[in-house]
Length: 418
Image (cartoon, rainbow, N blue to C red; front, side, top):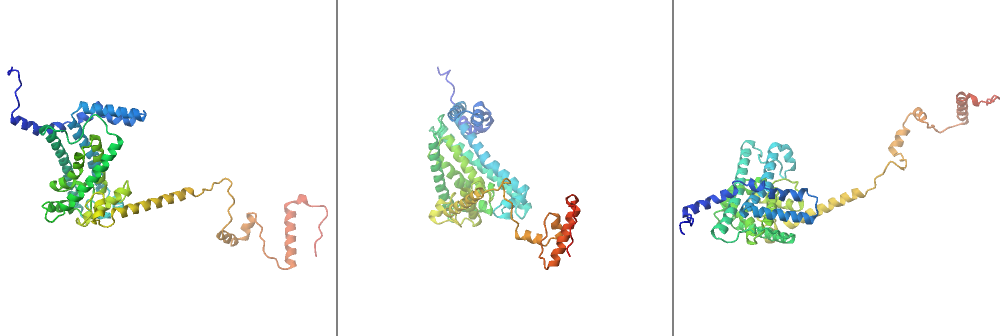
């Protein structure tokens, strides 16, 4: 019976399989993307004209098929890569290319003008450095994904416990997704503030020099600076505050991808340096606080949203309450201006009363030549002095009438007045 029993892999084989396993997971992600379940997952809810219930049914079926036909870890890692590429790396590269290709246009929408451009006032040196910063930033993003893979392999393959994230065929309810997002973002704010202030900006911490010499070497931010840091400082500052809430609350995979998309968009716009943002009420204040943190060498604004900075008195410039109040007042003022413009009556050409001439128009007509006024059908009425002038004008008027209408003359000649 032992002859038919397969041989157990040796310790070296197990070690090699464990090292090769992450590579096998991500070596061909197009297989999952180009599969029918994945394509239907993206296409059916977008282009279908069915009701909401049917769309949810199709979504559930395609999601279940995607999970059952692919490895859960493969779906998690590929989804994470897609989210980070679509919502952080690709927009950041587009912004960087725009700033470098048309700097004269970019200056007009940058908060700090030419100083905020990636190439700055020394295009030769700083332009090459901005692409180096971009390469380090993309490498750190891949490092975070690799750490996520390592944690999942540790839990499922070595410790033989459940995965860090919940990957099931069921779909979370909308209010469950919203509640998890609020919990995750609040815990991320807390972890970012504590680790950023007491680990990366503490004189007794060995990571302070790494963080200051890397990320704080850039005085004015652009999108790629969000993840530009020493690898160890990046793990402490960005990866752990973003991933630990998802792992502690054990987010569903769909909730985690939505949470990661929000975090990626926040990083993209908060460090962009633009004064024109999709949501001025939220992203505008976050962007200004991140800029002040870098420009003041880390003297304050340690959190993401600024709530703990306001509570603990470490805000630089306007705090989160003042930013929100100012943005709300500006929004109300703009809405009132638009409502006044819409409420003002618009006159049409039909039934419009003739406009009375203004004083300037009357002055022009008074200075006009009398012959031109007569040619437009207007009679010149000037003050007459004396009877002789009146008689001469009447005689001239009679002669003009007789010359213009000879048929109206009578047979009796008119007596001339002496």
